[in-house]
Length: 441
Ligand SMILES: *Cc1c(COP(=O)(O)O)cnc(C)c1O
Image (cartoon, rainbow, N blue to C red; front, side, top):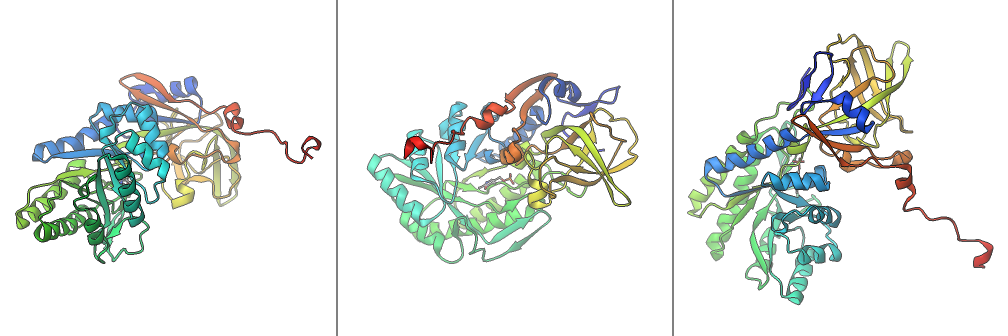
């Protein structure tokens, strides 16, 4: 059994997270329940930040908050000295509500609305990452009309596409994101933005994929973009202040995953950029990265209550829990794999094999196939590990299932950070029928 972060086991066989008994948490807050090990989040954040510090490289480590966005996580990110990325007005609003320093907020998205851009300008965020030519037009108009400066980066697709254990180099011209680095689009964007009175071009951004384990993919992307920076420097004297290499650092979901320490990813990146800058006799830019999953993924655990079981003779035993694809759509959406334990039977032998089913009306609503567990009974607490990224943030109310509560646990203390949805919450946006009634004719 692999435990994450501060997780441990008590003498009576209970899982603990942040030195808090998981079973006690379920008694206090109910299930399903997301529990975050905030000490692990802090450790990861400092791991990234310190690697840059030790290398003497100016950097911003921005938490990609689409992985889990809530007021408390933005406040935790602020406390740890992180910047944040947002990809929508809703995430930006949440970060601002949390009191996150606006100069450390970066705004992404391939179709930012006018209202979203206005909110970004009004709140004087640190940087807008420009995705396409329409956005250049919109931003020029807006910044000129408001006579307001804004730092911008150009998002480029460097032709390196990485997935888990391998990566491919492609033209990547069919990505929905960014300007192609190889077909002239990035150069055109550069020409359009250079020397603008209000849009202050800081450099380039790329994000080559997710759940990546191979540092060579990041280094190659860094090299390709650095080459472009060198080209622009030679042709026009433009010095890039920032090179943002995105997120995508892999974590361990199951024993098949072999993640590296933050320092390893970052060190290789830094070396690649240093080499290129030396070759062009250019000053080192600030390096920015955007970890999402690797900050919150394995810091999060979901606790469910076990309910009914169904035996399909000679095939499988279904063990149903009180949540499912409404709080974790990744198995259904990406065939994502997870490990789990029975949190009140941590010292019991693994004698049974189960398929963990959710309670939603979809045959595909299965969280884990064929996992070995102790013999399970109704009322047991199933802990699914590594659900902190893209779990709650992708949660839905399918079947009118209320979304779970979220709790932070650290050093023996625990705190509710997102309330459980109530049935009242579920109908709070609904309005009663009036159309077609006699009175309206
Ligand atoms: C999703 C995303 C990230 C974070 O990716 P992780 O795999 O969660 O680290 C970073 N930057 C951008 C632009 C993204 O879209």
